[in-house]
Amino acid sequence: MKAERAFSRLCALACALALGAANAADVRVMISSGFYAAYSELAPEFERSSGHHLVTTRGPSLGNSSEAIPERLRHGEPADVVIGVAASIDDLAAKGLVRAGTKVDFARSQIGMVVRAGARKPDISSVEAFRRTLLEARSIAYSDSASGIHLSATVFARLGIAELIAGKGRQVAGPPSGEPVAAVVARGEAEIGFQQVSELIHEPGVDYVGPIPEELQQETRFSGVLTTNAREPAAAAELVRFLASRDAAKAIVQSGLAPLVQP
Image (cartoon, rainbow, N blue to C red; front, side, top):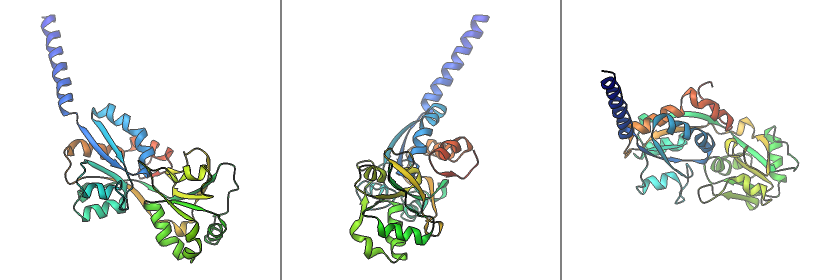
C-alpha cells in the first residue's frame, strides 16, 4: 500500500512537472533603455517564478532608425511585449501594432543631467540657471529617443536658444548598437549630457547633477503592452502584471524611476 501511494505521488509530481514544462513559453520582449535597468534585475526572478523564458531585444521607444521599436514592429519583427515610453506605446496602438487595452503603466521618469566625473557641477536649479548652463557649455549630448527629442524639439526652442546651441549639440544613438549619453560624457566628448535619470545614475565615469527644472520636464511614464501579433499572449500578460506589481517596485526605485505602487 505504501509503495502504491508513493508511486501515485511520483506520478502526480511527474504530471505537474510535465504540465509546467508544457505551459512554459519563450516571451519575446522589445524594450527601450529607460526601463532596462529595472527590467534586467527583475527578469531572472520572473523566469524562476513563472518558468517562462524571456527573449529580449533593445531599441529606442521613438525615432525612425532601423533599431527603433516602432520601425521594427512596422517591418514585422516578432514580439510579444513592448516596454517603453507610454506616449510611444499610444502611437503604436493608434497604428494597430499593439493592443491598446493591455497597456499597463509601470513607473514615472525624469530627464536628468550628468558631467564628467570630478568636473564642476553647473547650476540647473532654475529655468534661468539651466538656460545659462546650456549657453555656457562647450558641448552638449542628448539621446536620440524620447528625452532627447523633447529637449531638442521643445525645450531649446522654448528657452529661445535653439539656434545659439545648434552647433554644439550632439544626438547620441542608444543601445543595442549605440551607447548611453553618459558614456560620451565620460570620455570627454561632451561637457554635459541629458537622458532619463534611470539611464544616467549607474553609468561609470560621470557625476549626476540632478533633474532639469520641473517646468521643463516632460511627463514620462514607462509602460508595457502586448503586441497585436503576440504568439504567447498569456505569458506576455503575466510578465506585464509582474512588472506592475509591488514585488517589482523595489528594483524600479533602485533603477532611478518612481514606481506607481509603493514598495
